[in-house]
Image (tube, each protein chain N blue to C red):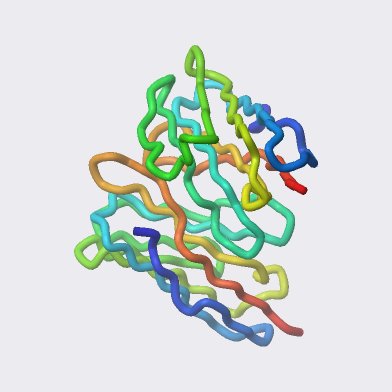
Length: 110
Length: 114
């Protein structure tokens, strides 16, 4: 039931790109992306509502394919500050039950 | 705007003892969530309130966990009796609506059960 993220972990050099995927078995109303650093609460990055929209924020963007219940987060020209664990948060259509994905640990090296 | 307030920040108890966590959401936020995050894992939804009604509590171990949100504002999560596997960070979050707005998190309450 928990959305599955891939890859589980990724290591990058500064300036490299990464893609993180989130796949749900439930019909989704919206997908959110968060980044969590060790010992801190998750920090909101962006929200995507059903309709297949794509959003961007600086060098981070995301897409949502509601037919496939999948979302992808794109990190371009990664910076050291991008290191952390990324979670997709999903609101199920109808109930709006809000659950988090399995997480992707990302580490950016200098 | 004041953020989500949680207390206590840290709690150490012996197994079989009880503990309570308190959360005060951002003013005007109708939806309140309690998550359990075990080290190295993602947040697991325990209970989700919409105003003072329960949207989902399917993952709440009801034989030992209870939660309430009286008057649709602040909320209390209780564990009685605690088990070793309850050691985790308990995150409270709130949002203006369901599914359309970001979740604002408190700093979390770290529970250690010995």
